Image (cartoon, rainbow, N blue to C red; front, side):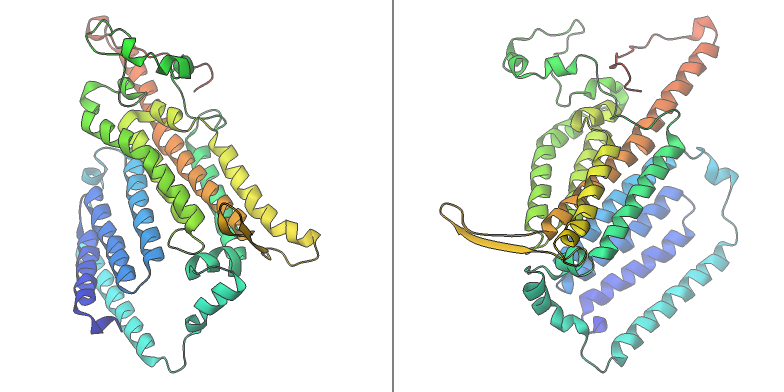
Length: 390
């Protein structure tokens, strides 16, 4: 049981303290961070109970959730906490504490009252024999409980569409905005001449660690962040692909791999802004979501053509001359669909809550400058964008 391990008791207590502190926190960001402590505490508990797959997914989800909270807070009034001060804090604290105590007691009683062997004891054998995979969690998601997973990713598509529809002014179609002429500068022939390119007139070089880093103002740039993001972005994408391919037998899977790739895109956006997001993945988020959903639904429908049940998987294994023993299950195609849906969701959230909010702020700033007296206007550099980027 949980209470037999002192380290887990300490983690549970810290999670409870963080939850109570979050309920009492007056500042919204403080409350989010304290609530995030409970999520990372769950990561530690999962890891201690021998569930690295769930711990990895929980850590990625918690990190991405914190980023989404920060993006949403930018749309709230700056002084909302002062204008709408929390009331009945003592009552809320008592209610939150009682709910936590009741749920802790329920958990202890339920774990102690079990008399029969849990069904999970047979899961490893069923996962290997029926799903041909050693990762029980992944086999459950893409094979045994594939219907639930397909409906869940459908909900993700609806959520992404709803968020984008609330924020985009005209149309949500198209990729994130890109810099004009960037395709010519990033061609293979131009890349071989990088060292010979002259410097700009302002004394800086034409090369930056991030393609769109120069679109940000000086006070919003960090060379350290740009260097770290530039060095870690492509390795993170490779690791996400590894998690996708290895998830059927090792910790990972399409959901965890998609989250890691999404966090790599988040890093590019936070370091270089909305134009950098367009350079990182110049693809329409709606198409990525659609392709992922088509792969998942196609995996469900194709078995019907061969007289099998929907979402029934097929397994192939062969001994190849160079590669050796190679195995493949059709549920991998379903996992690829989950991978693409998660990436599309993150990309759409970044385009809407990130890039589109930035564009709204730029429009508001331009209107504010137009209404100022002529003597108070300041010159700013307008960076060209490709036609139709907005």
